[in-house]
Image (cartoon, rainbow, N blue to C red):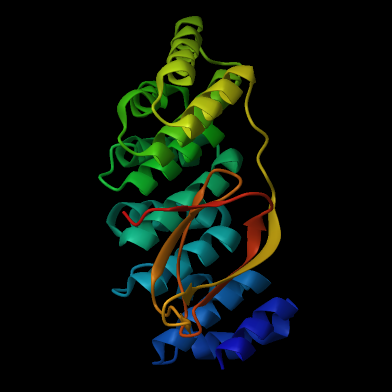
Length: 279
């Protein structure tokens, strides 16, 4: 049944939305989560109300799937709900909600951009390191100059390698925005130079060095990836486990494997990815 649900999503046919909505509202959490992912894959706008509801489900796996789906098709109308989910959601939910905010960030302006800036100011100090990493990425993509100080502090001293690396990339984007004050621009250059020479992680040093040369291009999220997780000792699928992947575009994606030990995504950036440690 999980394979059939995934196939409906892969077909990209809007006619599949109605039966998928029925499955997503069913009492079977495994099938419901699969249907939510499939609805996100086919871009079913009729499912937004369901995503908004499931975004705050007690089950982190369900809410995390809703965050990915809602961020994919909700647009600016999803902003308020995603900001709230990033604040109060479980580990995977908060990570995916903050990643969705990063994807929405470049298109926001006015009140939406102001709301995002306020929310990200809080998330940059979040106790969860991968949320901080995605928050820094979102601030960079939105070119939020007022958050430069907080992002610089992450680059200088955050214990998370992922967060520091994301901060370096974000600072390059803010510096290149064209409306950064001279003093702020100089502070960014100083922070990046220090990280390029002194950070204990080779990954962060490389990211800071690249950032000094200019902002990285955003990798389009248009590839199809399927992860299958196998326990090498038992030779059996690992079901219902949370995994965290740092994608090629620098965002962190959180997912739970299904009962087959699998996870699929039709909007994954092409290129290298790394597995992040469980928060």
